[in-house]
Length: 263
Ligand SMILES: [Zn+2]
Image (cartoon, rainbow, N blue to C red):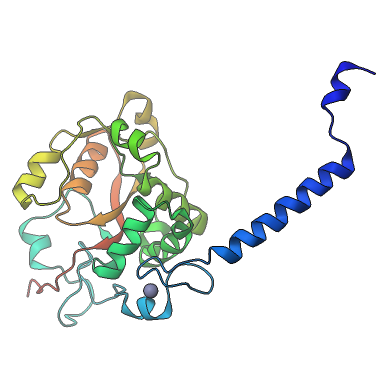
């Protein structure tokens, strides 16, 4: 008998082991029903329970064509907000799927810290719908990078997860390594708008190996939450400096107090 034969598991045993695993998986599924990502009640299927779903606030037109922030009333097509005119961003256009509130915050936290990676396809679908015009003109998606130390601690980048889901939905490819976070920035929470801008100053760059994927291309930055916009502004500046032809922004949830028009 050749020596290796002692390591071969007979086929009937293999089948028995596979069957046992299937039964165990079934038992675990029964024991651990999927929970609503926001209120943690058991749900049918995945994601959110009907009550939390009804509380989500999707962002639709009318909104500022540049910043994507909803208007109080409909000023007609193509109108910009006061904010977009007074303080224009480096990026071209931004769109977000939902407003940042209790339910969307719970979704973002579940994806980011709770290992609910199963939520990414659903969130990616909503973002793709909100950004379909931007995606139709895009060459590639660029996730907002984490500093390697935070990536190491968290094990994955939630923006890259969302970019992957948007890519499956839209067919626009993701370019990895186009942007690098070169400064380990402090958490943005609790900082003023000016402090946030200073915090991300010089935090992002396009590494030399990423230049070919950026120069002359129409890019869409992807992030989970937009608060002051300082992070995507820092990223957009770095991409434009490296020769990007256009930079748009897609976000899952944004802080969006209705704004007034420029009229
Ligand atoms: Zn719920």
